[in-house]
Image: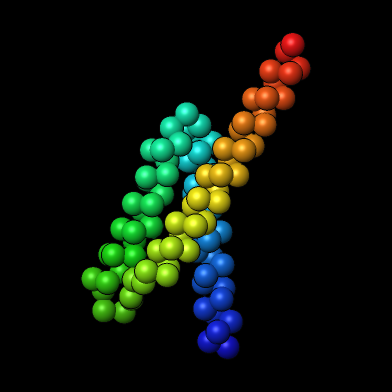
Length: 93
């Protein structure tokens, strides 16, 4: 049962940060670098802060999962935004 919970936690990290990355990308479509930096800094900060509490432990793997999820969300949002702009410009022509 322990491995099932760990697998779920990994999936949860990726999905949660994919949502965060996508939301910020849709909110600030012209600031992809700033959004990327915010996602990376948030993931690293959360893992670092977990090392300060006795009942939690921050790990490099968890930070990488969060960063990868954020990157997926940012990429997906960027692609959707780009395709929507392309479709809009084609319909206006």
